[in-house]
Length: 180
Image 1: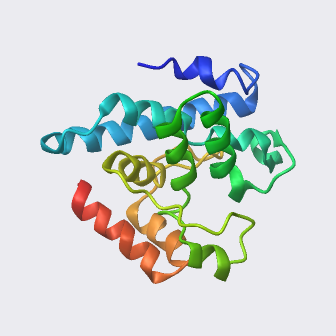
Image 2 (image 1 turned 180 degrees about the vertical axis):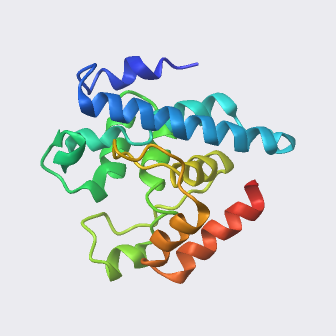
């Protein structure tokens, strides 16, 4: 199994607010994702990969400008997925890199990027593999804001997703049926 903290510390200063937020959030997502994987054991999900990807999925936020998280980079938060992909590709973690890119919302389509005028490459960035879907699903339950570390309710998640289209909420509801 990868040493995820060692990888994180290639890009983050240990014990800083941003480092702590990334690690705490990653642990929350990993715990939830592994619980889903255990319920789907008959599908033989790759548990090690799920844990590692959950820990690393938000690594790109170090280069974004989100002062409330202690991040003072040059990019808008929406690009943290493609930044993370680039970072993990550079260290040879190609499968993990795809989780970074594909975990935003319930995944972003080329049409989403065009309609919302997002500063992202024009391509589909949606979870494809079972493991990618599980990490993306688990991520929706947790915020990175320090004041709210509790697990979100399904209703809170749906309310947030519906702002981007009813199809986003419907995809999440499908995942609930599939994963719970």
